[in-house]
Amino acid sequence: MRGLALCLALSLAGQGAGAEAPATSPRPMPRLQLAAPDITPDPPVPEPQGQSPVRPKRRPDLSPPAAEVVLTVPVAAEPAPLRPRRRPDGLNASFAAPLAEAGQGTGKTKDKAKDKTKDKATQKGSVCGDPEIKGEVLAAIKGKVKGCGIEAPVRVTAISGIRLNQPATISCETATAFKTWIEQGMRPAMGKREVVEIRIAASYICRPRNNKKGAKISEHGRGRALDVAGFVFSDGTQWSVARDYNSQTRKAHKAACGIFGTTLGPGSDGYHEDHLHFDIAGYRSGPYCK
Figure 1 (cartoon, rainbow, N blue to C red):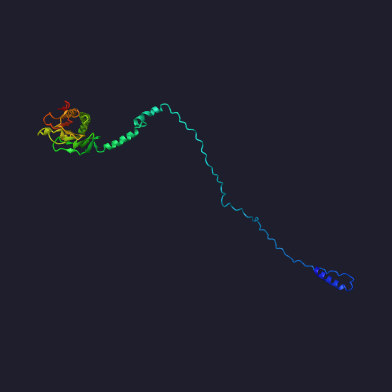
Figure 2 (figure 1 turned 180 degrees about the horizontal axis):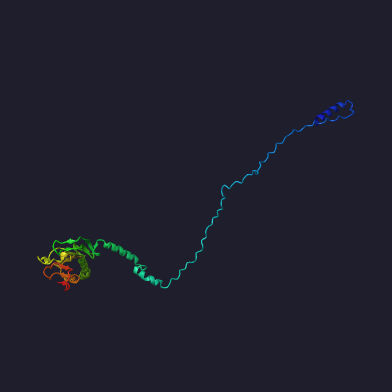
């Protein structure tokens, strides 16, 4: 509106330059009153009765906060210095005897283990409960003639490391006595000559004494006698009783007296000129040795 009035005034001024000025100054037209539009505010929303204002709830913790991990390294305590405690009096004495008997602490443990292994090895193939007597156990022998037979016979193949040229079927009592003669009589009698084989002439045989008809059953018929015909030595030489009844053979023959109940040989009765007869018969008067 001001701009319109200004333009009108300038126009009149230009005309007045050559005309007379008006008696009064024109007044500006009054401004039109612009009415502001009526704005009706929205009615207030009433709050529901009996309810508390809605507020957002606190979210629950979805997962517990991670605990702070603190690694701790245990520190080993400094060990106390090790010092042996004083032994009680008499402790050594109480253990000395058992250790000595067991062979512990004396270097004998290994030796005993070796001996046990050796014992097991030597027991294999032995009879009569003696590892030095080798052979096999036989079934009881029933004789066809009354008085003959062996209740518990064994077939012996070697005694005290000396082989027999043929197995001898005898009783264990006879085998044990023969072993004693080998170790205590024959070997000492032979001196430095090592016997490796004994030649057996007879063992178990069911017959009468000296093969005489009507005579009593020989001790051979009971497995209680052995006949030795000769010896074989480690150097290969051989002695026979018939040919080599020398001082050493005589000494071995004599050493059997007492170990056996009966010992016979060359010159005794004419029936034993080529062998030594040993049996374990017992007599009230003592051993019969010729």
